[in-house]
Image (cartoon, rainbow, N blue to C red; front, side, top):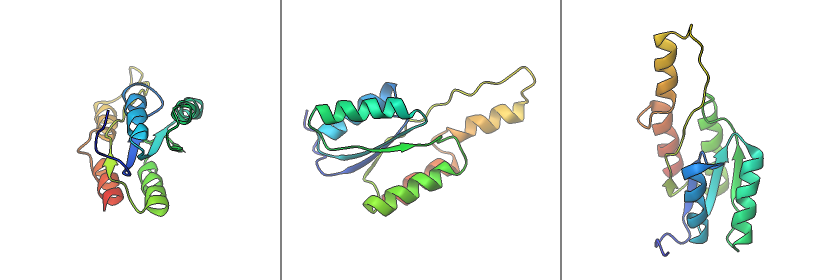
Length: 131
């Protein structure tokens, strides 16, 4: 499939499984430079193996917990330093944080804000990386 995206740089968080993983492969096939991130290194390595086996460009792997407050700065800095920015940001970030029965409404709300696409930290990574 030709998406007319040849030569672009794409940042895909949450790429170790599911939607992120399946988006990374066709973008790599378009000869894009894909930057894939997730917490689970083995799954990212398997994705990289699949991309290489298809003859597509080597992906950049970023193993980090993007729910961590400093992660967006780390990822943005790396994208800017290595590629001068990105052309495509795939907003694919989920969470799987356990809560117990003593979790407060404020804690639930704070955690939900961390993965909302309109939260300030998400807007910052997209804007900084795409400038």
